[in-house]
Length: 358
Image (cartoon, rainbow, N blue to C red; front, side, top):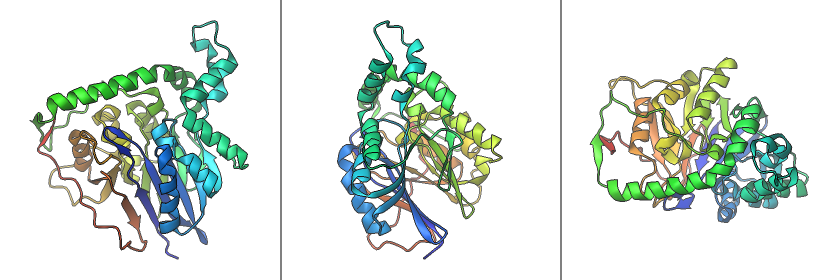
């Protein structure tokens, strides 16, 4: 039994709609531990179970973690819980805080119960996951900053920010999400062949961009294993990435010095990160003649997603010493001291693009 670890990104989604389904395995003591971090859409659960059985050789998952309640991240997890042996389930349950957040909704007709029901309906996949775990008597926990999940520590969100800032903003998110998708389609149609020159020593990822409150609620996890630092980000945005870096600093962890693997947030969308947030999270850009890239960054992006991941984003990670890979319809794997897989081909890393999206 090797003292190593592996991280698999499975392909999820069609067109612009991407999703995340990530499995991890590491040795801890005399056995391997298995984690699922997000499970894609509802129809992806069976593929997750098949993958774990085939490549991890087990019917037991120690930790099922839902980063945030969007259906393309939570949808497949109920099938995992209903089909396999599961040790713990970690997800946020905003409906549990209806009495605390009722003050933020200026509608006298809303009650604690109706608000809780509204949140359960809006986040049906996450609520179904909770119900599936309860039915099988599996412990359910919420991943707030400071929580420990195996070798991982949750860096964001803080509970107070989640309850009083993020949940009240969830009501606005459906409209924002629809507007974002519509804008992406229009932008792609207008700019499919419109690129601007990019240079190694010039980067423009402004702090003025924003993502939905659901995305910002993503549970950001950091794990350290055999001098390797693993950072899982879900769909987190600028504010949460900065909050995660600050919380890590308070724990005595300087992320730019220890992160060797990172999940690129939100499938490589440019509205989830900025130059300043990346600088404090994974470090500043390196000189062009810096040593060979030794860190890795993976993005989940569906095979037919025309604009994910963004070139301006992947260039930013390459500047900081990362080899960048993307799913694009196939499973990809990051591993250390683990047996090779005969049916996994060698990864082709993305180049540094001389032209990026205008």
